[in-house]
Amino acid sequence: MQADAARFIADVRPALEAGDTAEFVKKIEKNWGLVQLCEMLEQANVNARRVAAVGLGFLGDRQVEACLLRALKDPDREVTQMAEHGLWSVWFRQSTPAAAGPFKRGVDRLEAKSYRNAIDCFRQASVIDPNFAEAHNQQGIAHYFRGEWELSLQSCKKTLKQVPMHFGAISGMGHCYAQLGELSKALHSYRQALSIHPNMLAIASAIEQLQASVRDINEASGLFAKEAV
Image (cartoon, rainbow, N blue to C red):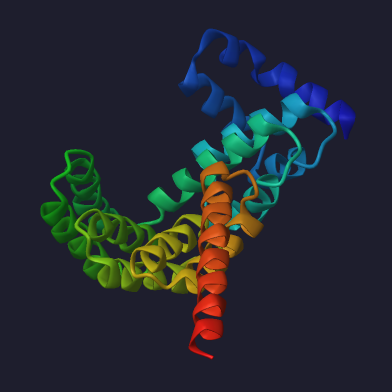
């Protein structure tokens, strides 16, 4: 397989060096299937793993989700970054054609911080395609920015019914629980997200901060109990 990895890199290198995305995708589609790209993620050749993750981001669907999730734990930081980008790309593409239009408008409204309009667009997309997990997730993000923690939680849970390993939605639940003061639930969600994607440094930091807060609360509770006695 090392020979295959070397051949893979040699095949796509000209397109990569030229920055020609269209040619890169064309080469992948013509000469390398999704199964082979997933196999490349297991190779010792780190460049093959990096390029395979990029290719899966362009061409992958839900059938490659498992191999990209495994790649989130790769020892190479670039591989994990490309795997994360790949998963987001796969999730963003998993809609019916009819739902894609309102979803794209929702993304644009979200980027413009027009959260109410974004929610309307994402809701429209999810009505058209109830199985479109990312429409629910993005709606949850918009609710979060509006301070609608409970509604955001509901959207995250809908996302996870479709994509149980969606680390973004699980992290989102942690954020909501933290805002609601449910620190134990927030910690549980954050730890679950980090077990899927160990390289989310912001989540690791949030866990440390919450653990310190929980310790302070527990110590204060013990002190109050002693004073009451």
